[in-house]
Image (cartoon, rainbow, N blue to C red; front, side, top):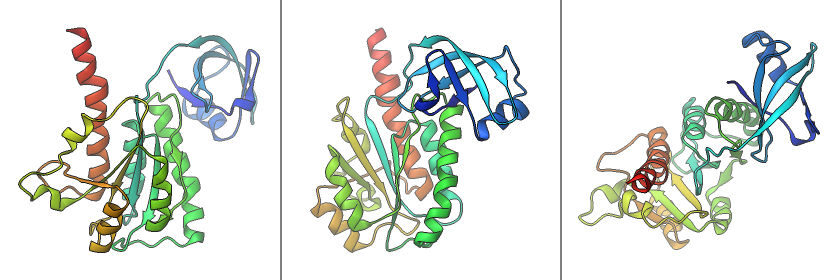
Length: 256
């Protein structure tokens, strides 16, 4: 069943108002009409099964039939800080990262980032990024839409990192040492409810200066497997590993 994220201000008792691009998607793409059912989510995670009761060219009204008791969110909040990559690679990180359960995304301008976003370019991209995340959240039946934060410098990222319980950065040199910090061992130490920050470098990786800055500010370098991953693959590897550990492996243990 199709899911739509609706501002909480549009929830009024048993009635929900749907506006904007979702009206076109409901009427033109899905071809829904009066009597059809959809799921409406507020930005605070509450979801309701609804029946469409009125359709106009610029607004759809739906009546709440029942509130749903569901939770598709990771038990920890994982934020991906992604060194700005070239082309549309960041779009892929946002879409697939949302599907895999990321809580938030932070693009940061690394020294070796090939792409450079000035303020004007960043503002133009922000709306598209938020649209990608919202659509991926609806497709994957998330309870919330991940936060899309404004681009940061490495210095701003360090300041932001003070809000996290665990801070990691993917470092390819960890794959070459005899006793590396493996991601699997680190994930075993995570606890439900923690805020986790995973920092991924751009195509050229982190500069030596950036590595030193991160280490000086309590970021732990980690190995993401024995192979060197592309920048757009690394974030997805981390999220998939965390999902397996918390949502599949532990679920299997509970059933034994």
